Length: 417
Image 1 (cartoon, helix red, strand yellow):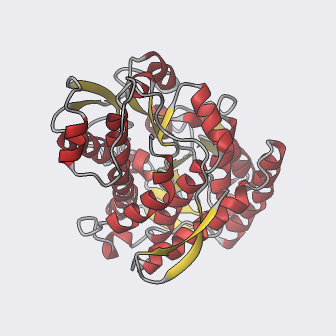
Image 2 (image 1 turned 60 degrees about the vertical axis):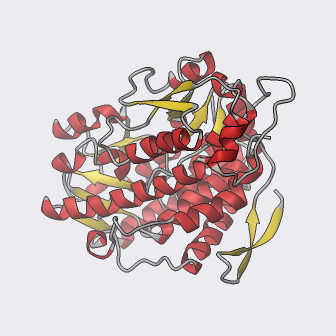
């Protein structure tokens, strides 16, 4: 990885940032002599560049089940921005609820042209995406933190993803064009029908997991990991097929899990590893004129900011819902926290076996860097998850400065060119 110095927000914080030149979005131009548009161009400049292009409509399958879910915000906002900046030359039809391709089929739909843009959950196919799975495993270094830590986790996850050549190789091999190659998706919590902060409550419990390393983490706590599609988790908890699920709140809240499992807990030191997806283009994206590719790619800055709003806002929403449901939102006991920390060696072993020995170090450095960056820009935690809804105002939260800094320093070098 290359490193370069930067000043965050002009405030004088100078640190090293991992950038790298691995991977990039886009492909061959659709016509000879196709020229692009500089980053930061006005809508008029984009529209001038696309004047000879026939109007098109792209199909984008969102990760959200319906347009009313929190994560639908970024999908619709992205679609609206693309249409506005292009002057109507590019329209995006957003579909929800996996209407065109189900989980595990989306990459194929992008590769064969049924979808143009989509959010795909790569975590369900670790053998197909080993570098991506290794990246997920390295998220164990994150420390649960409702605001600053979550901002840093989202940035660090993408920072390391963009600078990992093997990850981009496997995406390209499977016909995926990375627009946001991974998505931190929010802190993973233990969501249970009954409390789960003490180590003895984990003994023998059936815990739904979604990642390779999560299985070892649950075993270290004394539980039994169970594989289950996330769409089946509500019924699984309701019928006591599983006692708990490890899941982020962006997914858990729309599924209504707080109604059947209002006891949410989290470790203090290391995290449960995150299993997430990413935002990709496919075959048809590669055939767009270069200026159209660039226009779409540039809207990822806003998409990233909306992702932060959704994931962090979901934490505050869950905090309020848990309190209203007479549930609990508590950190692990010291004994349980120590047990989960013991599973850290499983993470190290897994990454070593897969040839990713440096991944934890890189992720830890990126997480520290972006934590300092968020603090320097004025963001701070004023409490924990239990009272998050009391001190955090979702309406006032606007991380555009953080998103812009991140985009320009990490994402921009991978812009189609």
